[in-house]
Image (cartoon, rainbow, N blue to C red; front, side, top):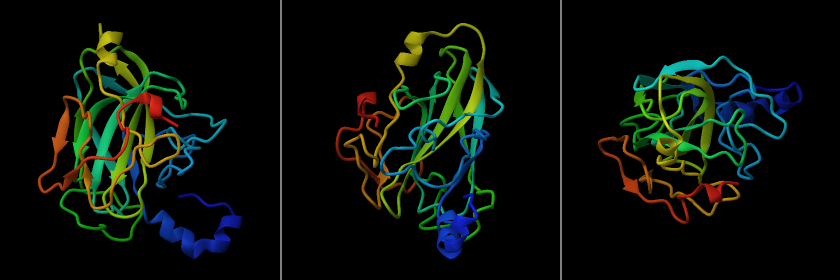
Length: 234
Protein backbone atom coordinates (compact mmCIF):
# COMPACT_ATOMS: atom_id res chain seq x y z
CA UNK A 1 0.00 0.00 0.00
CA UNK A 2 1.36 3.47 -0.87
CA UNK A 3 0.38 6.67 0.94
CA UNK A 4 0.24 10.39 0.13
CA UNK A 5 1.10 12.94 2.80
CA UNK A 6 -2.57 13.64 3.45
CA UNK A 7 -3.35 9.99 3.87
CA UNK A 8 -0.85 9.70 6.71
CA UNK A 9 -3.30 11.59 8.91
CA UNK A 10 -5.09 8.29 9.30
CA UNK A 11 -1.89 6.24 9.38
CA UNK A 12 -2.91 3.75 12.02
CA UNK A 13 -6.06 2.71 10.17
CA UNK A 14 -4.33 2.60 6.81
CA UNK A 15 -1.51 0.45 8.12
CA UNK A 16 -4.11 -2.14 9.08
CA UNK A 17 -5.45 -2.00 5.52
CA UNK A 18 -1.93 -2.41 4.12
CA UNK A 19 -1.37 -5.44 6.29
CA UNK A 20 -4.72 -6.93 5.42
CA UNK A 21 -4.00 -8.17 1.92
CA UNK A 22 -1.64 -9.90 -0.51
CA UNK A 23 0.10 -8.85 -3.71
CA UNK A 24 1.45 -10.90 -6.62
CA UNK A 25 5.24 -11.24 -6.43
CA UNK A 26 5.90 -13.36 -9.52
CA UNK A 27 5.29 -12.89 -12.38
CA UNK A 28 6.41 -9.27 -11.91
CA UNK A 29 3.36 -6.96 -11.87
CA UNK A 30 2.96 -3.78 -13.88
CA UNK A 31 4.75 -0.84 -12.28
CA UNK A 32 2.04 1.53 -13.49
CA UNK A 33 -0.74 1.48 -12.48
CA UNK A 34 1.04 0.96 -9.17
CA UNK A 35 0.21 -2.55 -8.05
CA UNK A 36 -1.00 -2.74 -4.47
CA UNK A 37 -2.48 -5.26 -2.11
CA UNK A 38 -6.00 -3.88 -1.82
CA UNK A 39 -9.01 -5.64 -3.34
CA UNK A 40 -10.76 -4.18 -6.37
CA UNK A 41 -13.05 -1.29 -5.52
CA UNK A 42 -16.63 -2.60 -5.04
CA UNK A 43 -17.78 -0.12 -7.71
CA UNK A 44 -15.60 -1.86 -10.31
CA UNK A 45 -13.89 1.46 -11.09
CA UNK A 46 -10.40 -0.09 -11.03
CA UNK A 47 -11.30 -3.30 -12.91
CA UNK A 48 -9.25 -4.71 -14.48
CA UNK A 49 -5.81 -4.82 -12.87
CA UNK A 50 -6.39 -2.20 -10.15
CA UNK A 51 -6.30 0.42 -12.92
CA UNK A 52 -8.53 3.47 -12.75
CA UNK A 53 -9.62 5.63 -15.67
CA UNK A 54 -6.71 6.92 -17.76
CA UNK A 55 -4.12 4.66 -16.12
CA UNK A 56 -0.83 4.31 -17.96
CA UNK A 57 0.51 0.75 -17.98
CA UNK A 58 4.28 0.30 -17.71
CA UNK A 59 6.65 -2.56 -16.99
CA UNK A 60 9.01 -5.03 -18.61
CA UNK A 61 7.31 -8.09 -20.07
CA UNK A 62 8.33 -11.47 -18.66
CA UNK A 63 9.08 -13.92 -21.52
CA UNK A 64 7.17 -17.20 -21.21
CA UNK A 65 7.68 -20.10 -23.59
CA UNK A 66 4.62 -22.04 -24.69
CA UNK A 67 4.43 -25.27 -22.74
CA UNK A 68 6.72 -23.93 -20.00
CA UNK A 69 6.00 -24.13 -16.28
CA UNK A 70 5.82 -20.79 -14.47
CA UNK A 71 5.75 -19.82 -10.79
CA UNK A 72 3.01 -17.84 -9.06
CA UNK A 73 4.09 -16.36 -5.72
CA UNK A 74 3.03 -13.58 -3.35
CA UNK A 75 4.16 -10.91 -0.90
CA UNK A 76 2.27 -10.41 2.36
CA UNK A 77 1.07 -12.34 5.37
CA UNK A 78 -2.68 -11.72 5.63
CA UNK A 79 -3.93 -14.65 3.62
CA UNK A 80 -7.53 -14.55 4.91
CA UNK A 81 -7.74 -18.32 5.29
CA UNK A 82 -6.73 -18.86 1.68
CA UNK A 83 -9.50 -19.17 -0.88
CA UNK A 84 -9.52 -19.79 -4.61
CA UNK A 85 -7.50 -18.17 -7.40
CA UNK A 86 -7.29 -18.11 -11.18
CA UNK A 87 -4.53 -17.28 -13.65
CA UNK A 88 -5.88 -15.71 -16.84
CA UNK A 89 -4.60 -13.92 -19.93
CA UNK A 90 -5.74 -11.34 -22.46
CA UNK A 91 -3.92 -10.11 -25.55
CA UNK A 92 -5.34 -6.60 -25.18
CA UNK A 93 -2.60 -4.01 -24.59
CA UNK A 94 -3.56 -2.38 -22.37
CA UNK A 95 -6.51 -4.38 -21.04
CA UNK A 96 -9.85 -2.62 -20.66
CA UNK A 97 -13.18 -3.31 -18.99
CA UNK A 98 -14.27 -4.97 -22.24
CA UNK A 99 -11.25 -7.30 -22.47
CA UNK A 100 -11.93 -11.02 -22.58
CA UNK A 101 -9.82 -12.84 -20.01
CA UNK A 102 -9.19 -16.53 -20.63
CA UNK A 103 -8.30 -18.88 -17.78
CA UNK A 104 -5.13 -20.99 -18.09
CA UNK A 105 -5.07 -22.34 -14.50
CA UNK A 106 -7.46 -22.53 -11.53
CA UNK A 107 -6.56 -23.15 -7.86
CA UNK A 108 -9.48 -24.29 -5.70
CA UNK A 109 -8.76 -23.82 -2.00
CA UNK A 110 -5.40 -23.09 -0.39
CA UNK A 111 -4.58 -19.94 -2.39
CA UNK A 112 -2.63 -17.79 -1.67
CA UNK A 113 -1.78 -20.02 1.34
CA UNK A 114 -2.24 -23.72 1.92
CA UNK A 115 -3.41 -25.20 5.24
CA UNK A 116 -3.91 -21.79 6.86
CA UNK A 117 -7.07 -21.03 8.82
CA UNK A 118 -6.41 -17.31 9.17
CA UNK A 119 -3.35 -15.14 8.48
CA UNK A 120 0.37 -15.86 8.55
CA UNK A 121 1.24 -12.88 10.75
CA UNK A 122 1.33 -9.11 10.42
CA UNK A 123 4.12 -8.38 7.93
CA UNK A 124 2.99 -6.94 4.57
CA UNK A 125 6.53 -7.17 3.17
CA UNK A 126 7.23 -10.86 3.81
CA UNK A 127 7.57 -13.36 1.00
CA UNK A 128 4.64 -15.74 1.37
CA UNK A 129 5.87 -19.34 1.82
CA UNK A 130 3.55 -21.07 -0.65
CA UNK A 131 4.25 -21.08 -4.37
CA UNK A 132 2.11 -22.41 -7.21
CA UNK A 133 2.88 -23.71 -10.67
CA UNK A 134 1.01 -23.04 -13.88
CA UNK A 135 1.74 -23.82 -17.52
CA UNK A 136 1.48 -21.66 -20.62
CA UNK A 137 -0.74 -23.57 -23.09
CA UNK A 138 1.10 -24.86 -26.12
CA UNK A 139 -1.66 -24.04 -28.61
CA UNK A 140 -2.48 -20.38 -27.89
CA UNK A 141 -1.13 -17.49 -30.01
CA UNK A 142 2.30 -15.99 -29.43
CA UNK A 143 2.83 -12.31 -28.67
CA UNK A 144 2.54 -9.67 -26.00
CA UNK A 145 -0.18 -10.37 -23.45
CA UNK A 146 -1.30 -9.48 -19.96
CA UNK A 147 -1.48 -12.14 -17.26
CA UNK A 148 -3.89 -11.68 -14.34
CA UNK A 149 -4.01 -13.29 -10.92
CA UNK A 150 -7.47 -13.11 -9.33
CA UNK A 151 -8.33 -14.21 -5.79
CA UNK A 152 -11.56 -14.76 -3.85
CA UNK A 153 -10.61 -14.84 -0.16
CA UNK A 154 -12.15 -17.39 2.19
CA UNK A 155 -12.28 -15.30 5.39
CA UNK A 156 -13.28 -11.63 5.63
CA UNK A 157 -15.26 -9.25 3.46
CA UNK A 158 -16.62 -10.48 0.13
CA UNK A 159 -14.03 -9.09 -2.24
CA UNK A 160 -12.14 -9.73 -5.46
CA UNK A 161 -8.39 -9.20 -5.72
CA UNK A 162 -6.58 -8.72 -9.03
CA UNK A 163 -2.98 -8.00 -9.99
CA UNK A 164 -1.66 -8.06 -13.55
CA UNK A 165 1.70 -8.64 -15.23
CA UNK A 166 3.00 -7.88 -18.74
CA UNK A 167 4.20 -11.07 -20.43
CA UNK A 168 5.57 -12.11 -23.83
CA UNK A 169 4.33 -15.52 -24.96
CA UNK A 170 7.05 -17.12 -27.08
CA UNK A 171 6.73 -20.06 -29.47
CA UNK A 172 5.52 -21.12 -32.88
CA UNK A 173 2.05 -21.76 -34.23
CA UNK A 174 -0.96 -21.40 -31.94
CA UNK A 175 -4.49 -20.38 -32.86
CA UNK A 176 -7.26 -18.00 -31.93
CA UNK A 177 -9.61 -20.99 -31.82
CA UNK A 178 -7.56 -22.59 -29.04
CA UNK A 179 -7.64 -19.33 -27.10
CA UNK A 180 -11.40 -18.96 -27.57
CA UNK A 181 -11.89 -22.49 -26.24
CA UNK A 182 -10.46 -21.58 -22.83
CA UNK A 183 -12.97 -20.68 -20.08
CA UNK A 184 -13.76 -17.09 -19.13
CA UNK A 185 -12.28 -15.66 -15.94
CA UNK A 186 -14.81 -15.53 -13.11
CA UNK A 187 -15.66 -12.00 -11.96
CA UNK A 188 -17.55 -11.57 -8.67
CA UNK A 189 -18.27 -9.23 -5.77
CA UNK A 190 -17.99 -6.00 -7.77
CA UNK A 191 -20.56 -3.82 -9.52
CA UNK A 192 -21.50 -4.91 -13.02
CA UNK A 193 -21.75 -8.60 -12.21
CA UNK A 194 -24.44 -10.54 -10.35
CA UNK A 195 -21.93 -13.17 -9.20
CA UNK A 196 -21.15 -13.30 -5.47
CA UNK A 197 -19.20 -15.56 -3.12
CA UNK A 198 -19.91 -16.79 0.39
CA UNK A 199 -17.59 -16.44 3.39
CA UNK A 200 -16.03 -19.64 4.70
CA UNK A 201 -16.12 -21.29 1.27
CA UNK A 202 -13.29 -22.10 -1.12
CA UNK A 203 -14.83 -21.31 -4.49
CA UNK A 204 -15.41 -24.23 -6.82
CA UNK A 205 -15.22 -22.45 -10.16
CA UNK A 206 -18.18 -23.11 -12.50
CA UNK A 207 -15.74 -23.59 -15.38
CA UNK A 208 -12.16 -23.96 -14.08
CA UNK A 209 -10.72 -25.31 -17.32
CA UNK A 210 -8.53 -28.36 -17.81
CA UNK A 211 -5.63 -27.14 -15.64
CA UNK A 212 -6.86 -27.28 -12.03
CA UNK A 213 -5.22 -27.60 -8.61
CA UNK A 214 -7.63 -28.52 -5.81
CA UNK A 215 -5.88 -28.39 -2.47
CA UNK A 216 -6.44 -30.95 0.24
CA UNK A 217 -8.88 -29.83 2.94
CA UNK A 218 -10.63 -27.31 0.71
CA UNK A 219 -14.20 -26.49 1.77
CA UNK A 220 -15.49 -26.25 -1.77
CA UNK A 221 -18.69 -24.39 -2.57
CA UNK A 222 -20.18 -22.78 -5.66
CA UNK A 223 -20.59 -19.02 -6.15
CA UNK A 224 -24.06 -17.53 -6.42
CA UNK A 225 -25.54 -15.89 -9.51
CA UNK A 226 -24.46 -15.78 -13.13
CA UNK A 227 -20.72 -16.40 -12.81
CA UNK A 228 -19.64 -17.72 -16.17
CA UNK A 229 -19.54 -15.15 -18.95
CA UNK A 230 -17.64 -12.04 -20.08
CA UNK A 231 -20.92 -10.22 -20.65
CA UNK A 232 -21.14 -9.86 -16.89
CA UNK A 233 -17.91 -7.88 -16.54
CA UNK A 234 -18.40 -4.37 -15.11
